[in-house]
Image (cartoon, rainbow, N blue to C red; front, side, top):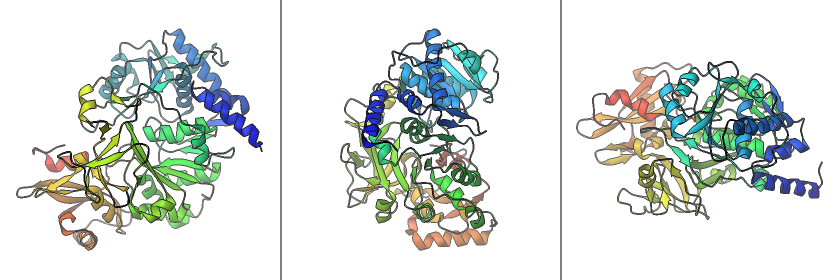
Length: 527
C-alpha cells in the first residue's frame, strides 16, 4: 500500500502528464506489467505495451507527414488497438474521430472527408473500410487492424522497427465526435480547447489500485469513450472490452474479473433484469461499486430494480456530445427524487424555454437549454448555421425536453422532435413509456404519434413483449387498461401494436423515427 505522500506525488505526476496527453506513460512507468486492456477474445496488453505502441504510432503518423492539429480517424470494434491509437493521438497533438463502424459506405466516407482525416485505422472485419477510404482522397496513411485490407498497411507491420520509447515533445491532442444524425447528416462536435479530467475525479468515483473497468458499449460513442476507455486510461486500471451485448456474459465477466466500474444504458438494465432468477444467482456482482448511466431516459421502475439488485451504486448523468451543464445524481439522491437526472448545476446554468423563448415555470415542460462554458464553447464543425440554430444567447440546446420541479431537479420528458401533438396538446412519449414498462408483460416500449384526421396525431403504443407472452387483443386491452390507471386520459395510448423487435441505436436510444415511419408513409409529418 502506498503512503499518502507517495500517492500525492503520483497524482501530481499524473496531473502534469494529463496536460500533454502522457497519462499512459506515467502508468507504464509505475506498473508496466499490469494489464491495461483485455480484448473480447482474452488477449491482454499491459500498460508497458500500450504505452510503447502509442509512441510508435506517434512516430508513424509524423513520418507520414501529420502534424499537431491534423485529423486521425479510427474505424474498429472494441479492441486494444483502439486504446493505443487513442493514447497516441492524445500525446501527438492529433485530433481523433472514432467512426461508428456500423454505418454504410456513404456515411463513413462523408465523416472521413468532413473531419478532414489524413490517417485511417480500420478493422478488417468492417467491410465498408476500403471503399470508404477510396472515397477519402486526402488520406496519407491507411492501416488495417485484425487482418488485411487491400491498399492498407497491416498494423503490426506499420509499427515494426519504430522506437517505442516515450516521445520527448508531447502535445495534448483533441477529439471530435459526430452526432448521431437523426435529422440530416451527422455533424462533428468541435472544441478548440481539449477537455482534461482532473485526477481528483477518479478518486471521487472510487477508483483505486484494485479497480477494474468494463466497457460493454461501443468505444466510438461519447459515453463509453469517456466513462470507460478514457476513465481506465486516466485511473490506471484494467479495461475489459466486450464486443457485443450478452446479458449472462456480462454477469460472468463481472464475476470473473471482479469488475468495479462500468457505463451502461437503460436498455442494458432491462435485459439484465429480464434474466431468470437462477441465472442471476449464479454470479457474484458484489465487486461493483460504480455504475454510471445516461444516454437515454431510464424508467424509474427499472432503476429501482437495479438499485435493489446491485445496491446504491448507480450514478446518472445528463449531457451530450456537445457538453452541457453536466447533471449528475447518485442513487441516494435519486431515491429521494425518483426519475430525476439531477439538480440544476451551480457552475453552469440551465433553463427551460417554451416555443416563444420564454422561461417555463417549475413543473412545466419545455426545451432544455444549457449555458456555454466561457472559452470552451463547441461548434458544429464547418456548419455555422446549425451552430447558431442551437443557441439562444450564451445557451444552447440538444433538442431535449424536460422540466424543473419546485426544488430545481430536472426531469426529462423526451426530445422536441419526438413530441406528439394531439389536438394542439403536447404529449411526451417518454412519460408514457415509463408507465407501460411497469406492466409485467412489457419488455420494451416505444410510444409514437400516428396520423389522425381530426386531432392531427393520436398516441400509439408499440410494444415488445417479454418471453413467455403472446400478442393478443386481450393482452393489448389489458396493457391499455393498465396505462389508464396511471396516466391522464389525454396521454393514454388509443391503440397498441405488438412487434418482435424495437430499433435502438448503439448508444441505447430508442429510434422513434424508425418506429413511427411506417405509420406516416405517404403523409407529411416524417420528422
